[in-house]
Length: 253
Image (cartoon, rainbow, N blue to C red; front, side, top):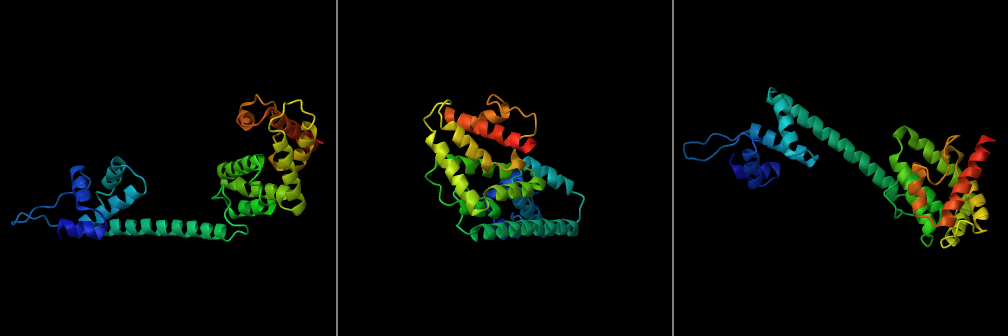
């Protein structure tokens, strides 16, 4: 097998093959009497493995370490390992396609904050079009962030809490009203009289399961909350602080 045939078989260029020779990843075959190099099945297997490892994101130094670990294996072992690698890739692709199909089939379509889970997309669709509300869009971003950062074992509980808070028509209407009140405070100071109503309505929307534990510092200066308050107008930040205080008191009572 010539270098061009080897490259075509694996789906790389002859320049790539020569680069892997230069890096010491792919052994160079002996030259025949006519000066041509001839490649064997072993070269095909190693080159295919290098390609898959680099496609997985490994650097060439890491690929070299993996290949060194395989040095003592016979061809059957290498082929079996390659087959296992392909099986894992196929399983991962099937899982991703299942999630994509579920998301595409969600009522209301794919939300602009996506990709998100089908459950969260369904909640967003139930609230309705809030594209004109800066506070609603910010809230959605926070929910997407929460869903994507919690541990897998906690995600089900998080989604259940959000369904309880937003999953009914009445709750969706209450959420839209909350966004309206908070949007109205965009240019207001912390002492605006409308803050009290916004805080009360917002507190009714907060899932008890997502509230801070007793003793948690609700002051805006707390490191965990500083980023949350940073983009809020003073009146909005005060409304959020009061709402968390109201809801936390209700949780403890």
